[in-house]
Length: 160
Image (cartoon, rainbow, N blue to C red):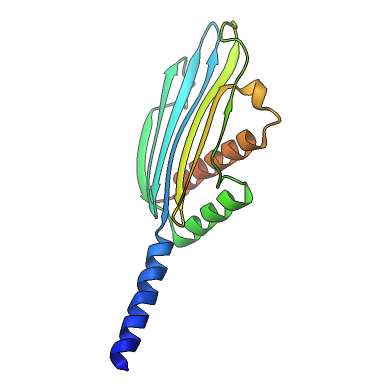
């Protein structure tokens, strides 16, 4: 009986720890402006359960506070719970894409390329968004993806 109880407890704990750790996120976010003084920023996030790696690189015209940066840190359990909740409430647990239909020959545009890959609870989700941001003004997927990236950026800034 003790043996069976030990096996059941071990199986329960293994399942609990495996499901708790089943969160992997990879994000690439390019945001730029095509104009006389073109510039862009490219951010990368990699989250594997609580371990986080982040980098940002700037090209073209740079502002005073725009410095390339890399950071690694560890999220808390509460951070992970907030991330999971945001993925679900913002509808980012989907496979979807948006692509700009406008001409690529404009003299001025603000453009983006967002690639989000999420593995959560054994399911894989991919979101790809590319093009002129003005075309995505009414797109919930775009707004929620940018919200999620902004939230992660703030979390990385605050984490140790």
